[in-house]
Amino acid sequence: MALTDFREYFDPTYQEILQKTLVGKKIANTRFQSDLKSGDTVNRMALDLSAVIVRDITALTDRTIDPITDTQDTLTINFKKGVSFPLYNLEKIQAGSLNPGEEAGRNTALKLATALDAFILAETVNAWAVFDTGNLTTTDANGTPITLSSTTVPQMVTMTEAKLRSNNVEMTNLCWVIDPFAFAQIAQFPIGKELNNSGTTFKNGYTGNVLGSEVYVSNNLTGEATLLSAGVFVDTQTITINGVVLTTMTTLGATAGNVLIGANAAATITNLAALLNAPGTTTAQGVALSAANQAKIAALYLTATATSATVLTIVAKGSSKLTLAETQTNVSWSTNFVHAYYGMKGGIDVVVQEEVDMVMLQEPKQRTVNILADIVAGIKTFADGSQKFLDVKIANA
Image 1 (tube, rainbow, N blue to C red):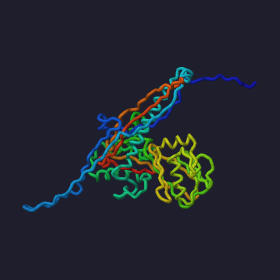
Image 2 (cartoon, rainbow, N blue to C red; image 1 turned 45 degrees about the horizontal axis):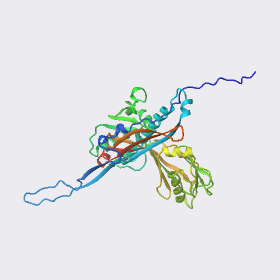
Image 3 (spheres, rainbow, N blue to C red; image 1 turned 180 degrees about the vertical axis):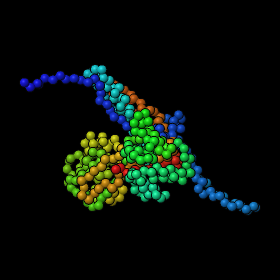
Image 4 (tube, rainbow, N blue to C red; image 1 turned 90 degrees about the horizontal axis):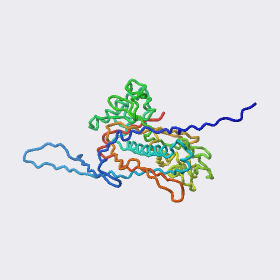
């Protein structure tokens, strides 16, 4: 006789929600934290002494007077992000011993903190200098991200220090912020022998030291990639970004994620950029993404730019390694890399005017409470701060 009745069991716990490790505030400078509130601005003056020259002097002879100039740089408390969700009273009753409000509140607060972390680490692109493959053996970048190997890892670790030292930076309080894949590569080689990805060392992203620099691992670095066209786009072929599929079409149709093929590659690239920058908007050139895919793109804080007639560039804050694919005949992903931070701590200034603040608003005609959580901050890389670190471009394997 076949069994048809089975006991059903309800587990009184929530499934674990995985969150990224936050390291941005660990490497940032919070010197203005206590003095500012929302809307306030820090104004800092920067002196330019580049025209002042050490000259020979001759007694009783007029000297040449060199000019000095100054500029003003500002930090404004204008990073304002929030999340909102409802909590129905009967849901709380049915949840029994569970506390959905507390659980949801805690995890949405972490979402906001993660967004702040992504935007702090995105300041890496404002570094004094880019460091890439060209810098491994010369003093100049060549535009090619570094592919890590037994040869390039020692070169990168030692030459980044030399590059930063050449800018007359005080070589103290140094750190790396890298993604897990770069960490795994570095840890394989003797130069990474002090790294540890387990136990108490791996706390708050800290994994140990490399040549005197603290190493932090983060999934919140900025990812960047370029899509290169060598000809026209083809009907029904696809482009994929972190699981979000865009389909190029000669006739647009109504399927979510369709992008119209233009008169030439440049027009299609422009159409792709437009849909990625406004994924919830349907136009004559593109069909809005599904709600689920809109959420994926929103989580990347993605910006797409038609860099040229043949190149689409995407930059994703907090994505770290982008997962990319395509089925195009004449189009391919050309580069895919992360912006890793190397240099002194404190190069990026951060003011968090209000840590995650949560307000509960009762719906007037419902047994529902709307929960609104906000964070307000200011993030800035001042001119002198940018001199303290490098934007190290590491290719995704």
